[in-house]
Amino acid sequence: VQLVESGGGLVQPGGSLRLSCTASGIIFSIYNMGWYRQAPGKQRELVADIAAGASTHYADSVKGRFSISRDNSKKTVYLQMNSLKPEDTAVYYCKSAFKTGAASGVVNYWGQGTQVTVSS
Image (cartoon, rainbow, N blue to C red; front, side, top):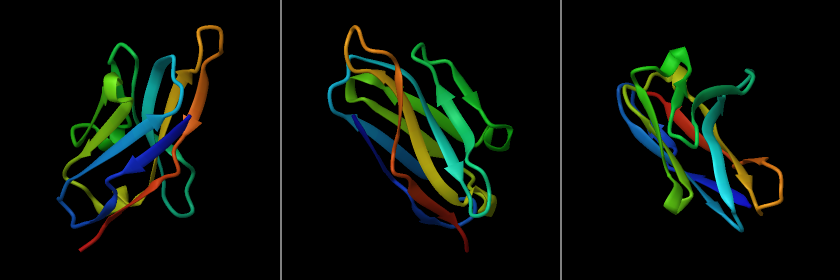
């Protein structure tokens, strides 16, 4: 299973970006999907996640500005980021949990990361 992120880039403060993360490979079922970020010199932190039943959870720092969603048919998780701030600058990683077979366990997979830079 591979996860590929896209949608990062340079944006001015107050702007918006939409990140996508698509899974490929043999996937039997999809569980939690989420987005994390890591700024230079800081630990990786959870930004938002979405359960298989579509319940969501957000870090306090992004509540009201970011929105996470998923499309299981496309094996894709999205992160809509609005009202971006310079402190949102980081490498954003997606993490998703899958079973690759009926008898397999649930395994977490990470994407390679996509850079988001918020600067004027």
